[in-house]
Each structure stands twice: as C-alpha cells, then as structure tokens.
Image (tube, rainbow, N blue to C red; front, side, top):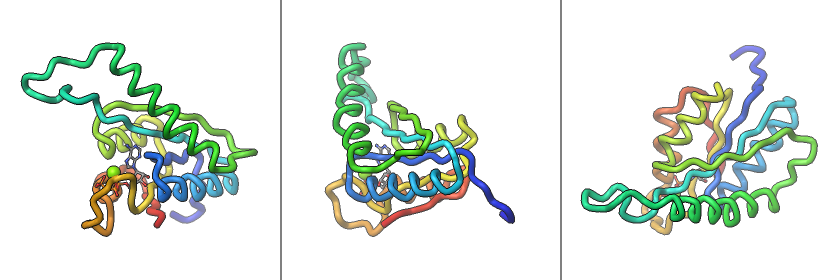
Length: 147
Ligand SMILES: Nc1ncnc2c1ncn2[C@@H]1O[C@H](COP(=O)(O)OP(=O)(O)OP(=O)(O)O)[C@@H](O)[C@H]1O
Ligand SMILES: [Mg+2]
C-alpha cells in the first residue's frame, strides 16, 4: 500500500448517526485526495418481496421506497455533512445492504469503503453491526469502520 492514493471512495449510509460520521470521514478523505465520493444507501425490498408466497413489489411500491430513501437518508446525510469541494454522487440500491455495498465497490473499483460501526438497527446486542461486520469480511477493498 505504499503511495496509497484513493481515487474512488464509497460510503454506506442508512441515516444513523454513525453512518453520518462515516460520511464525514469519507468526505474528508475524498477532499484530501481529490478522490470521487460515492454515497450509497441500500433499501431493503418492500415487505413480502422475498416471501415464498409474496408477489413481487409493484413498480409503484419500489418507487416509493426509493424516494423515501432519497428523502430520509441521502438528503439528511447531505444536509449534515459538508461536502463542499468534493466531487460526489449518490446511489440508491435495492437488496441486502452488505451484498449491495460490496457490489457497488466492485462495480466502481473502489479504493476504500467507509461504514459506521453501528447503524440504524435497534438491537444493541452486537458491538459491531451486521452490515459493518459482513463488509469487513467480504469487501474487495480496504474498509474503514467509523465509531
Ligand atoms: N441500508 C444501508 N445502506 C447503506 N449503508 C448501510 C446500510 N445499513 C448499514 N449501513 C452501513 O453500515 C454501518 C453499520 O450499520 P449496521 O447495519 O451494521 O449496524 P446496526 O444497524 O446497528 O446493526 P444491524 O443492522 O445488524 O441490526 C452503517 O453506519 C452504515 O455505514
Ligand atoms: Mg443496520
């Protein structure tokens, strides 16, 4: 990793405070390295999609969850984090958060993935959230975990 100079940085955000801290760290890193920042939120499919008897979500239901994600997560994150001077884009994905984050990293050939140590999950039994834990195990690039 000598001379490591990230050009593409991916951060996963779920609206939680730790994910906002992750976005701050990712933004600062992008700024330092004049790297491109990709802010990703993953929407779990609407109820029933994966169910054996569940019918696929309508285009309307999917569109609704995506626009909720846009409003509740991405807009909130961008309001809370100063990204002036940073070249960034936002992405919304549908599916299982850790798998989708890893997919995005592969697709954009990310140099680093940044996540919070915890997220919006209500269970407090784990020290590290399941998404953070999975990406540390599976990511194709270095992972920065922000408390
Ligand atoms: N849906 C998501 N989209 C994008 N990034 C996410 C998503 N969920 C979690 N992350 C990223 O992973 C970090 C850790 O969240 P994680 O979901 O692992 O913890 P948790 O919500 O506390 O626990 P769990 O989800 O296992 O109950 C978040 O701070 C965020 O960076
Ligand atoms: Mg979570």
